Length: 299
Image (cartoon, rainbow, N blue to C red; front, side, top):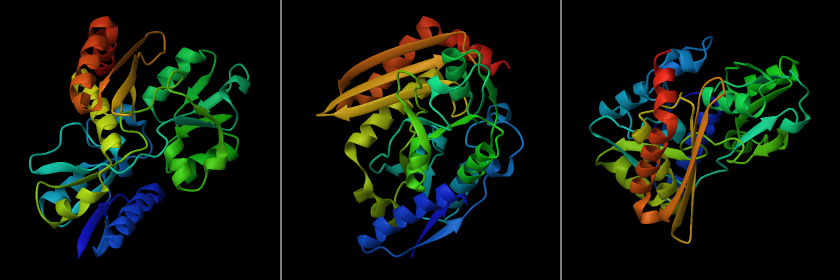
C-alpha cells in the first residue's frame, strides 16, 4: 500500500484524496498520512514575516526521505524551487484555474478606504499598486476560516486563489476573477505537485498523472522564481500557459508598498520552458526587480 503524505487542511486533504482516487483507478491502493508542518503551526503572524522556504513542506519531505511516506501532495505554489537531495517532482497533474479571485465584491465596486484581507505579500503589493486607497489587512487560516471572517464583516473583500475555492465547491463565492494583467498569480498557483523519492513504487505510480502542458507552464514559472532568488512569500507573480506547443509567460515583481512594479513577458517553445523562465527572470532583475527584492529581503 502506498502512503500519501499531506497537510491536514480541508483543501490539502481534498487534493490528497483526488490523487488517491486517480491512483486507485490505476490499481494502486493508497492511504493518506496527515503531517503538521511549521506553516500550519504558525497562525498568528503574517507568513511574509516568518520568512524561510519550505514552511509547508519541510516535515512532509522528511517523511518521504525517511520512508514513512511514498509520495506527497502539495499545492505547487508552496513547494520551493530547490528540492532536497533524493526527492523529485514526480508529477504535475492538469491545472485548475491559476487566477486570484476577489470575494465579497468586485474590485471596482469597493469604496474608498475599504478593508481588504489577504495573507499574501504578493497580493497586497499588487492591490496597493492598483488601489492605493484600500486598507490591506492580513487574514490567516484555512479557506473556510477566511470566508467566515469576511462574512462576519471584518473585511469588505478578501483575495483568495480561484483554484481552492473551486475545488472545495465555493466557486460561487467569487465576485470577480482577477486576470493576470491585473493581479499576477503566485508561481505554480492552481497546480498540484506530487513529490516522491527519485525511484520506487511511489515515483512509478505517479508518472501517469503528469500533464505535459501544465508541467511546461509551471517549469517556466519556477525557473523564473529561481532566477529571481525568491521563495513563496515574496512579491513575485508569474503566469504561464502552453497552447499548441507555444509557451507564454507574464511576470511581475512589486515593492511591498505597491509604489514600484516591474512587469515582463516572454514566449517560446514549451520544450524550452526552463530557459524562457530563467531569461525572463534575468530581464526583470536588470529592469529594477533586483533593487525591489533586495529591499524586501532586508526587512
